[in-house]
Length: 428
Ligand code: DOR
Image (tube, rainbow, N blue to C red; front, top):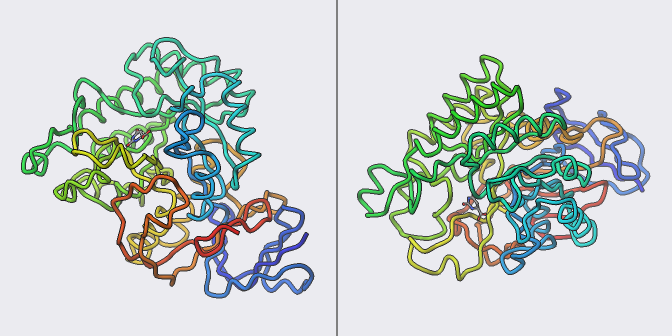
């Protein structure tokens, strides 16, 4: 089967391409990326005025299956991913049971083949049962297709366990993804600790709760010469630590989320529980530091931390609500609207953060339009204007603080292995 995407602006940072070109797909693979392909066989997609990119990757997604299917499942979560412009998602292991054995990882992969509409790469646990006491059989997890390990949702509090995990993971070239949180500092915290937490009367989470663990993990990565990846980094101090560590050659990478790049803690004053997330929305100073770090190479990728919740966990008092934001269906539009349209990022910088950036962190063969690569393609419409309406989400999680926002720039088409899976926010 042939498909030719004609006349779009092709942005493929890995190959240093930013030009109006055509992309030909044959049998699910990229066949050619050239100016004016004359072959008229197969289906023609007119992409004039659109941005044609390698398929976007979200390396931090909670698909909730197995165990929490009332919040999300692999079918609904991957539909949300496709609608949001993602062709590959990595799913976090804080399910029930957690992904700490090959059996659970294989289950997730099988379900993804059967009911998923985008590529799903499972991430296994660092510790058995995510209990933070004994490391998992990482060799088995790798054999079952896991691309990284993490105890995300909670930190690895025991430094010796983290050290062992880093040493063990290194044998398989596995990145260790760290949820950096010192629980003794963050416990019962509802929002960022600062002026607004005082004003709103909510218990604060200090930046130190994150930064102490970022510093520890950098030191352990340096000791073990292993790769540590900092999940959802949210503070100026974290960025300074990561930047300095990278400069002295430590194998540390990091991701930031759209919500930390766009919202500040001031918004919590509405007591809308959809603003409650961990790590919390920070103050403007930190938001600025994250944006600076996007530009100077400190940040490797943007990841959503898509955390869908059932309305019951959010329709309650702020301090009882669950932490998390349903992010898959707004992430790309938010970055296009808030950062690209405003001239903070250019197209190539944005596409890199969603494609080759995460692919390199994970060491996976994705994120480019290389000839012969899987034809995973995301096409963006920079002029589309739509208002975020969670009622229209494919995700079961309607928990977004961006509801009602009108955004300029939306994903237009999502193609996975040569098949069009979503167009204009609808599943095909
Ligand atoms: O806000 C969050 N929600 N942060 C996490 O680290 C976990 C996630 C979840 O699983 O709901």
